[in-house]
Image (cartoon, one colour):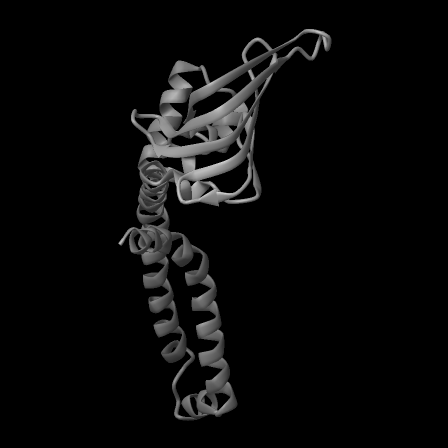
Length: 231
């Protein structure tokens, strides 16, 4: 059911990309076939003008344009928001879907090296990141258990067994700390996997919402010209 929802939420994007080209190809094939079969010649020979052919094309093209505008302006932003929300829900309810065996995950601010994966159990895990103080942190564990998040904003919880943590100072290579622990619990936030966790991008807004947002930015004057141009 979740997969069906994801497919449904992604349909507006596919329609927005394919509808104009499908319309163009359909009209070209139709009119080309009428020319090949001399139907246009018969219409002209019977005293009819080109309007009898062009008017239906223009009416149908206008109707498809209006539907495409509605899909682009309303359904596409809503579908994008719903898709991202559903994707986060799936990853939070079952964090094992983002853990691939024998892979390297490059996150926004960290890197995870993953060994064997057996259900929710991960072996030979290496976690590398840099703290606010500029020191690099490397955590290794022989065995780890991946659990679902227990609080909002947390994607997964790692229960590590036999963990070793090394803290390195890039400015002073001779200074480092090493910690050993039988059990370590580490929370990985969903912001590490997903950009703009709760922010709505311009693509996820309707033209009405965009207009209000741009007007608000101009009134407050806090947005740069580059940001205004992007919106």
